[in-house]
Amino acid sequence: MKRIYAVFLGAVGVIALLMAQSSVFPPSSGGGVWGSITGTLSAQADLASALAAKLDTSGTAAKATALASTPSKCGAGNYPLGVDTGGNAQNCTAAGPAPTSNTCATLTASTPASGTLGIPTDGPLWGLYTSSWAWFLPGFGPVTRPQAAANFTTVNFTGATLTDANCGLFFTAPANGASTNSIKFAYLTAGYPGTPWTKTVCFLPTFRGNDYTGMGFAVSDGTKYITWGVGIDSAGTNSFHSVIYTWTNTSSPTTSGTVEWTAWPGQLMCLTLNDDATNFNFYTSNNPNDLTRTRIDQRARTAFLTPTQMGIFMNVPQATTGASMLILHSTL
Image (tube, rainbow, N blue to C red; front, side, top):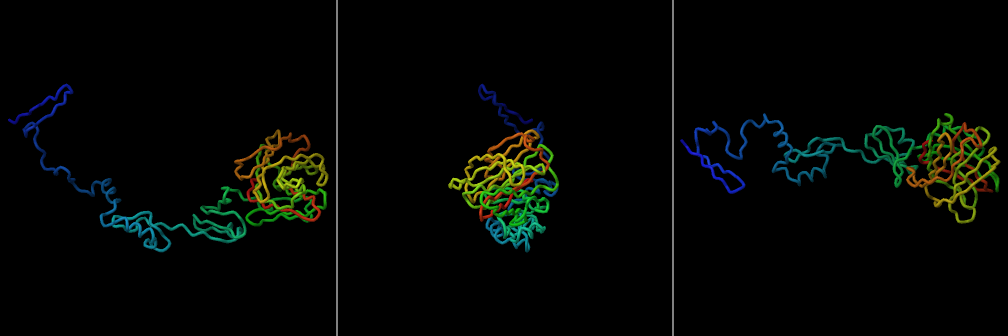
């Protein structure tokens, strides 16, 4: 009979058992040596899978680097998501396509491979194609391209144009004559939006300084108008200000108001108009996502007219020089 010895170590009560081989603890029949694995490896699926994912001793980091720099090892037009245990291509996947350049109209009509970056040759927006085109303005982030010009009805448009161009909606208006008002109005043919609504337009304006040219939002009842826009300070500083008018018709403003705006020619202009079913609220900013939006005007929505049309306008009370606005972001 083999003996078992017990040693008590101090107050902590730790017991070390020194056991001799005994019939009380018979040895196992067979089994591996400590540190070894016995059995059939293929029958241990989780362990086999984990080991298969490891880089073999012959599959060095240099092989992986070489593979990354020569993705054709996966086959033309593909790249590896990883390497196998020998440092060879594993899980080859179609490579992301190179950027493509073309006109906005051609890019918009195309259905390239997912991940294609489109760089228009005729406008400042960039596009990214997944299942459809998503557009963004470098430096500003995602934008919503404007509705097509065909979705607008025009009023008093002699000499003015509204076209799909340069990745956006291009609105031009001629000079009316010195100090002569004549608003050009383009409203949504689909009708006045249901309230409450909030609409934003961002555009690059072009007009001569030192006049009261205005461009922006307008609402109408078919006869009268309210316009909220941006213009140039006539005092010679060429800083922008908001230009807010009510009109009894397209050439007769009745009241006006201006608020200075810290923006300068060449900057992106963003205007937001909200109809909350009680008031009109007008905001200005220099960011398509309204990160710097400031409310400039609030007025009762039916105090002057009951709106049935809404859209965009331009007014150029200039002797010789017309104006334009290239709308690049619009939620109209």
